[in-house]
Length: 116
Image 1 (tube, rainbow, N blue to C red):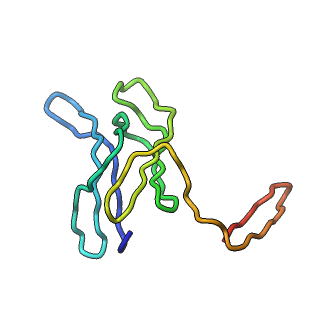
Image 2 (image 1 turned 120 degrees about the vertical axis):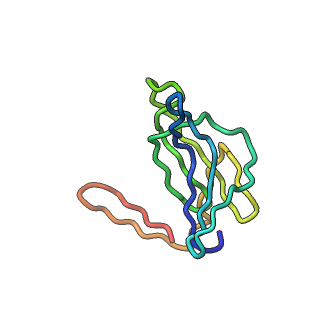
């Protein structure tokens, strides 16, 4: 994606009758502080808040969170494929191209493989 941006998914809004869930996606371009709503394809997931999200390659990986039923914690992991032309909810995860080289380290009995 061009430039630096923050992608926001989900959350909840306070309303007169309590709180409502959000399942929208918003972008904030950090170079000009412009907000936008991206074009999103695929089957949208259930809305949630108190979740975690990280970008890995061209994916936003969203995990867990509190669901629409306030007493339920979600136990799934969502994948949002992101590109300059739009976003897509997907179930396939191929975050990296073929590695050019690799290094293997063993630290305290833990094997770490670094792909570059």
